[in-house]
Image (cartoon, rainbow, N blue to C red):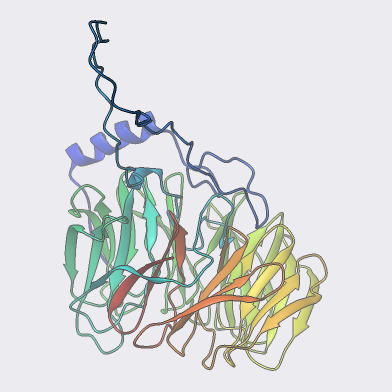
Length: 437
């Protein structure tokens, strides 16, 4: 296996920078809010300013010798500034944090009918990756099964303008993760990169010499945790790319791993949910009865989807709390708020369950194609794409449809993110959309 390490100068500079910035914590995304609440946070409003007051016209009087006051300058009205990109809600990794909540209490999304604010089309035919947003920059990979190559891009989230782009020799189909000046992302031909966020230059890369596709990574302290379709679960050193350990499973890992309280959790096509310590020791496994398709963690409970039509709640010791079954397979990582779990099925239904006992609260059957991409929750609304090429927004409390928007092809794997009143989502039509009211 080949690994290209960073230069010593780069490495020392990075260590010093990391020491100054401090280490990132589990589930942290740099937001000002410290305790995310459930859906329905107050929406910030602009503080009104006093507008210039025009003088009231009066009847023209005959001139007199009375001296007149010296006129004063009337201030010109100023245009409202576009919100600075650096103030937008942060989604530095897929599903917002390393626990994969898919829930952001401070993000603001649209609730009425939407139009395209801006769109970016790439050279590749598909955008299957979920975008991430950190420090005022939007990062997105491009490419799909029909593409011979791929690309990775850093964009301005307000205007869609490209900051930098990097061509890759294979499609980029999974989300990246951003941490302390680096963006970590893999390709479908087995190359995993650490790129500088400033310009996209390669800091280090890992090439195992075999074709495998990586999940979105979890980056915690100096560990980069990532699964692959080669049935391997890796931990790399975030600062020099060294392989610290790899855990073998007996099936492909296609969903992003979860990191919580010193343990990493991953689902596998071998039917198992794996719990591995940060040092690489296997703690336990739980058999889900079918290919496990995604996992999220919140409040010491894991929520796992599987191909046998089930969503299962498992505690952090591996014991099952509850499970529910429906008529179709749950295909992706669920979104979890303080009191609800949201998950879609291959048959085209989005469900809401009670987080404590799995009781069904509502279902949405509008999609005419499978809901195989993860949903996300922000500002009291659930947002999700479907294989009918449509993005849906439904009220988190009731499941009522707020709006829908049709792209030109399927949305198969890409989850949306919300910030500044926009929805960002990729489609297999090769386009990244920014939608707003």
